[in-house]
Image 1 (cartoon, rainbow, N blue to C red):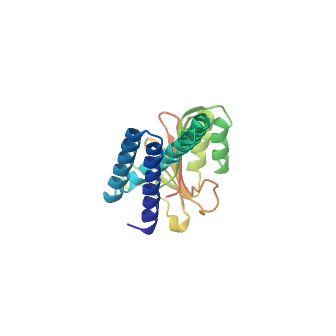
Image 2 (cartoon, one colour):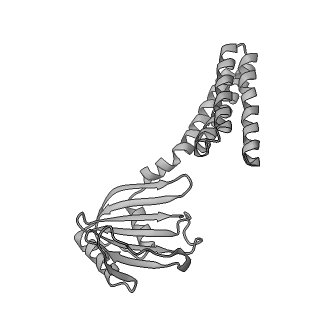
Image 3 (cartoon, one colour):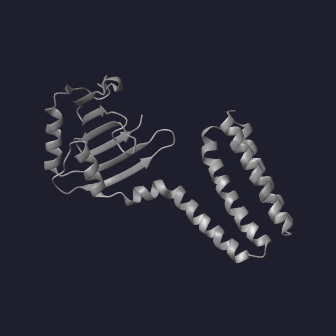
Length: 233
């Protein structure tokens, strides 16, 4: 157990005391007992069990709940129930938006965003295309991924761009020992198999605003699709 974990756990237990005391003083003893007991159990289980990744999910949610709960009962205790309700709703909305921010970012992602990203990597789309899917985020590693259905002209032009590259390694069998780019060399590798064409490369870590520096572009020959994967690993 590291010092950071100890400090955060002490803060959570301290706030749990407030979550018990405030409704108890307001005459809601059952609410105080139930909330205090549940919070104590949840925090203790994640702490004693050393649940790793689960702590990353659970403790922020517990902390948000405690802030909302304490805000509401603090105002209610001083006969300001409406103010407490307003503050609790405002905090709930703020925390909800924070939790949903990765999904909101995905929902707002559009064709222009995809064009700009590809253009940054020297791939310019001339024709219209279909944005099939996109996602961004991650827990320990960050990924930005999207797949496009390209026009035949754009697909063929990018395929030629890969095949004529000085880094082109040739055609390999699917499932064979495929080439890969070396991070230590900030390497670039282009190759193809029966089903796909691939460009993979690394750049300096400081160049992209979102922190990604490892990139893979994959053309699906049968579906005429391009998949982009940018990551920080």
